[in-house]
Amino acid sequence: MKKAIVRYTEEHYHKLVSADNVLVSGGAKQALMVLLLAILDPKEEVIFPAPYWVSYPEMVKLAGGVPVVVTAEDGTFCPTVREITEAVGSYTKAIILNSPNNPSGTMYSRDFIAEMVEFCEKKSIYLIMDDIYNRLVFDGKSAPLCYDWLKTPLEQSKLVVINGVSKTYAMTGFRIGWAIANRELTEAMGNIQSQQTSGPSAPSQWAAVGALNGVQASVESLRLTLENNRNIMLDRLLAIPGVKVAKPEGTFYCFPDFGAYFKDSQKLANLLLQKVRVVAVPGKEFGFEGHLRLSYCGTIKDITEGLERMQWALDPNSANELYLGDRKLVRDWL
Ligand SMILES: Cc1ncc(COP(=O)(O)O)c(C=O)c1O
Image (tube, rainbow, N blue to C red):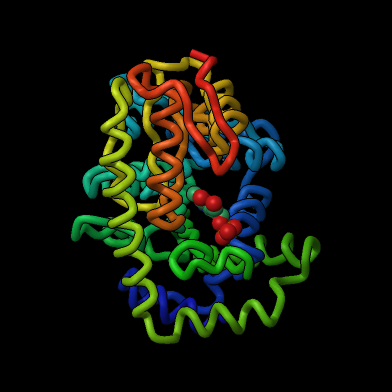
């Protein structure tokens, strides 16, 4: 498994690492968790931009640290380098960047990544690049690769790359992810993991080796399907009056603003679930009220039907009644 990841890193990051730089874990989630356990002393801070993946604050707290969220003043999904670096203080141990981003689908720019790599190197702060979606990128673009700007040799560097097979190969249930870090840190993470779970299951490792070393056509086919699904979802969302949405550049999520209808995203998610059987994750959980995270990794039928139901539930111009199978719904909540 480690050999396959070394080869993958060379092919997709143009970076030569050794097997001693690789920790294979039960998903990227475990890699992140053991990383935080390895580096954090009590009360040390970890900075990440909002919107953020729901697990970051909880993982940081579980590891005894303090999450520090930075939100862009201009309301966009990516703070400026200045906004992030202003949050850095004497307790800052690490910065986590997830690009393309769950939940917004935003991909941080090359300049932004370059400056963050440079800044963390200069300040000797851990920079954790959660690259789990970095091959699911649209519109002919590709994700910036952090190693392109790393000047320090990996062994002296505090740059850690997280990746896995859950998204790129749609192998979430196999639970294989990894971290690439300097040897000393990799060993520390391995020591912690060995007391937690020993290591990831062998059958899952073989499956992941097959994915990384096998024919890669499925990745492109998945990427194209998601790009098409994204376009369909965007068109449908923009047809709902008052809904604002930034075009996702990657992942399989979008993060529209429903603030014109509901300020409380939890209430809106509950309403959609209970009334029209649409599942959405409230923006509040990602540190961004008024938004909902919608996934477009389902079928086109599910996406269009889901959005038709949402539009019916929200749009004041829609008909008063809707049939879901033989269930008649009457719009009596707005
Ligand atoms: C941003 C981000 N990082 C990490 C993970 C964890 O992935 P894995 O299934 O490899 O644990 C996810 C999964 O949702 C994610 O969205």
